[in-house]
Structure formats: structure tokens, C-alpha cells
Length: 405
Image 1 (cartoon, rainbow, N blue to C red):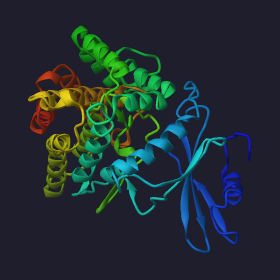
Image 2 (image 1 turned 30 degrees about the horizontal axis):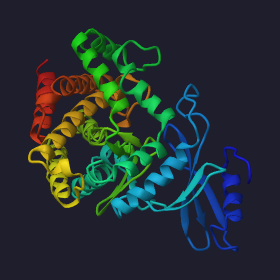
Image 3 (image 1 turned 135 degrees about the horizontal axis):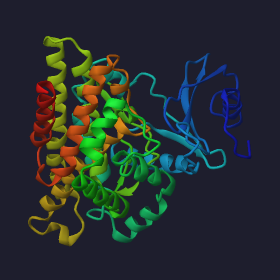
């Protein structure tokens, strides 16, 4: 296979044979398991040995819509990013075995013993080690790729290496632009659209802040971010967390990754609010999510400052007060990004199953209004948000207001 084409399952089996990925006597079975918006994911298994691996191929257009023309080079970026993340945060990403430049595909570790976190949260499962794992991943991958630690010339080379214009454009459109006006590509319930018109699209202060945020996203090459760190990009089991799919990675604002994690925990919280019966099981699950929201912020902050003291190489970054100033800016961006993510997943074209699987339309609409209300407050109040409790207080206030309405 010396010329690029989008593979089908039979092609992937032939590809494995040509690449000698399995023993010559292997009995290979291949199924396409991708349910994301962009790529084709194949699981290949040797029926004789039960050995399996994943082959991920980038297509020339997004699966979500052929309006999005995206360079298959994103798979090269993902493969290289995963290798860097594997070094910086061992055990928290899958291992990449090889990348094929011609076919725009990578071969990586099969995580079939894990479960996609979004689905697990929809099933109201708890993962007591998740916060410990994700905060380590965030601190290591964000701080250790920044100018605080990396030689400045080397860091600028990395910025160039991981420039990602096609996928950045998707983020600039879907996260920072389209949710905040009546874009024809938006996809939302009629009742939610009326709420968006009144509370978001007509609020000139909010629109100004989203404009500021869009330009900060486009110009702040702070750290090598994952770029799409939602619960659909995380595999979990009780004792393990694996971050996947960093194809949106580029040098951007560090708070973008942290904010995505927070927003998606809030989606899980709203799913539980709408779908679980009142009682101890619901209370216990929502209490775990509340704790996860608070601790993701607070543990990230404490780990970040500790790692800063160990790894800082830039002289001026050692001046008293600078570490806290730098961290405060990340938490401010975290709040803003969480707000944008909460809005765009309700209003825009790329929804989350936490919300769309709520069968009762009135409850779904209520959950959507709460998400939009939280999102708006996160954006407008980002300069005052400092702690995990600050995040949770806004979530609880918006939830209480909805119950009283």
C-alpha cells in the first residue's frame, strides 16, 4: 500500500500482513469501531493468540460533516504527541507502535479492557483514581512543555512542528464563534434556541468576552495542549486512566485542557440530575462528581506548583509571586474554556451523549438551560474564579435556580 486511500476492514487486514504486525500464521479479524467525528478506528485481533491492536486512520474529511476539510496530517501529529505524552506522563496514554506517513495511520495499544469514560459516566459509574490520574497528566503535559521548563528555541521548534491549522479552525468556529450567534449550522431544541437568543446571543457583554477568548486561543502558544480533552477522549477502568485522541494538539493556552475536563464532568452531573431517581444512589454519585470537579482544580493547582519548584529552568520564572500569577491565569482560562465547552456542546453541531440520551424532552431542555447558564457565568466571572469550590458554587447556584424556576 504505497498510495493513500481510506481503508475498509479487509484492507486493514491486508495492511497488517504487509506490515508484519502479527505472526505469519495469524488468523486476523478486523472491525471498525470508531464513533467519533473525524477518524476511522479499526480493531484487529489474531483469533489464534487473541493478540489485538488498534489502527487509526485519518480521512480527508470529517465524518461529522464533509463541510470540514481536514488534513490527514493530523494523524502524524497525534502519533508524535502520544509519544511525547507517554514520556511525560507514563501509563496515562496508550503506547504507539508505529506511524505510517503514506497511509496516514498509526498502530497503537488496544485498550479494550478499558471503557470510554463518557459512556461509563452515563451508566453512573465512579472512578476513585480518576482525579489523581488526570491531574498528573495535566500538570506533566502542560507545564513540562512550556517556556517555564523547555529551552525557548526548542519550544519554538515544537510550536512549528505541531502547528495544526485545520483542526484549530474547527475549534475556532465550533467553540468560540458559532455557539454565540444564530449560525445555520447550529443544532438545538427550539426551546433551547429561545433561551440562547435571550441569554447568550443578545448579551453584548458576553459576546465581547467570547471575542477576547477566541483571540487568546489563537495567539497564546503557552503549552502543548491535547486540544480535545473531553470524557470521550479518556479510557477508564477502576485502576487505570488513559488519555487518547490528541489530534487537535497544538501549542495553545494550558487552561483549554483543564476546562474541557471540568465541563464534561458537569455534563455527567446534569445527566445524573435528569435521569437518576431521587435517593441515596443519586446523591452518592452526584457527590462524587462534585468532589471530582473541586479536586480536579485544587489538586491540579497543588501539583502544578510543586512540579514548578522541581522543574523550572527559566530564571525570571523563579521570581517571588510569578508562579502564582502564571497559575492564576491558567485557572482563569480554565473557567472560560469550561464555559465555552458547556455552551457549544448544547448549541453547536457536536453534541455530547450525556445530554442527548436524556429521553424526557422537558428534562433534557432543563439540563441544557442549566449548562448554558453555568457556561455564561464561567465566561463572565472567570477573573473571580480561583478554587474548585468557586467552580462548584456556580454549578450549584445555577442548578438551584433552575429547580426554583
